[in-house]
Image 1 (cartoon, rainbow, N blue to C red):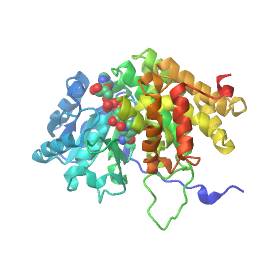
Image 2 (image 1 turned 180 degrees about the vertical axis):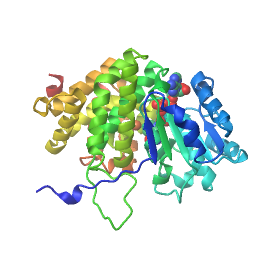
Image 3 (image 1 turned 90 degrees about the horizontal axis):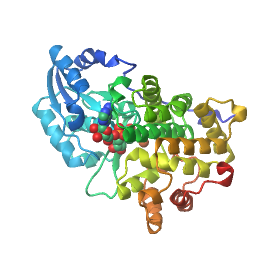
Image 4 (image 1 turned 45 degrees about the vertical axis):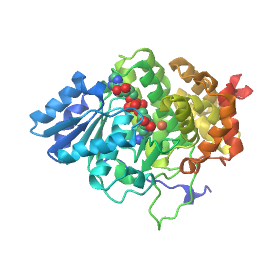
Amino acid sequence: MPDLTAARGTLRLPAQVHFGYGCRAQLPDIVAAYGRRVLVVTDPFLAATPQITAVTDSLCSAGLEVRTYSDVTAELPVGTLDAAATVARAHRAETILAIGGGSVLDAAKLIALLLAHDGPLSRYYGENLVPGPVVPVVAVPTTAGTGSEVTPVAVVSDPGRALKVGISSPFLVPAAAVVDPELTLGAPRGVTAFSGIDALVHAAESYTARSLDTDWSLPPPVFTGRNVLAQPIALQAAGHLGPWLPVAVREPSHRRARHQVALGALLGGVAFGSTGTHLCHAIQYPVGALTKTPHGLGTGLLLPYVLDTLRADPGVAERIADLGAALEHIPASEASAARTVARVAEINRTIGVPATLAEIGVGREQLSRMAELALKSARLLAIAPVEPDRDLLLDVIGRAHAGVLDERTAA
Ligand SMILES: NC(=O)c1ccc[n+]([C@@H]2O[C@H](COP(=O)([O-])OP(=O)(O)OC[C@H]3O[C@@H](n4cnc5c(N)ncnc54)[C@H](O)[C@@H]3O)[C@@H](O)[C@H]2O)c1
Ligand SMILES: [Fe+2]
């Protein structure tokens, strides 16, 4: 008899999630339901594109009072969010429409937080520190990967901290998510590859998360660990991404590939937004800080090495094999954890994710410091499926540096 006390499930999602080519046509009605004074949050490049101007025009035509804030900058320095909140307050925004990549969606969540609760944002760093509901956010991704349109987390950089820092709270889950693959058609190759592989990491880490102890007399944690409601969704995400991410990177205007990758990314977000992520994300924080490389480049680079290490545990190996079966659309009898690792490494090669930490400029002498910094991500490490001590982290990081996968995987 399996341990049913560990078979828990919690999903926290936007009240409405729409997916499909053309679904952005719903935006005026969806946004109007939350208020008439709207702050559109986007970035300087996207603000000038015809798709985004068409969306803002459609809101104005529907009689909404629209102000656009387009100064979202990469890495989201906290100071820029205070400035954005000042603009939002001056407009007396009742709702926020966020259109952009993960950076824009995260910015919007934090502006919504600052509109409802006193700053500074540093008061809310960590988990479950947001005291109540925030201004409703309608989230419209233009990249396929982060899943931020459905997740309870936003990540910022703070000049006072060595690593980027997360604010996680169920109150940060957007009110509505509108995922229209058409908006991702223009995303450049690198953005498609790195945000897409991050979605696969979300699915993989969600599916392999450890079971946490459940005490239903307490509010469930923001990130639940293994979660029976999220598991099938994580596998589904892998099934959409596996065959189609390489096609979307190779042929950016392939409509079916963009549809599949956007769907996989959304489902990956649903899965990890409830479960959480673990080792690749904990190690990416120091990798990103040191090399200034995109989030998904780091998580994607690390994924084969993390899975290769984890498969030493027979229980986790089974789950990694399940993931591979979903990824490759093969029967369970043909799948194995080693084959999954090899397939993930092959996807990385095909889409241009660098194979090693050495390739992105990390020096040998930096590896132990990286392990120390990764150990600080206690929230993430708590749901890793094996004990994530310093030795384990150093092993993953060392192998990712040198490009060493187990021989059985290479064979
Ligand atoms: N909150 C979450 O759940 C979550 C999860 C994963 C990552 N993140 C965060 O998301 C950020 C990364 O997001 P991202 O990968 O979406 O990239 P991004 O938002 O940083 O955008 C990268 C670049 O792509 C451009 N771009 C976006 N969409 C485009 C389009 N359709 N056409 C042309 N150019 C386009 C942007 O203008 C920008 O220059 C990181 O800050 C990371 O920490 C958040
Ligand atoms: Fe991620």
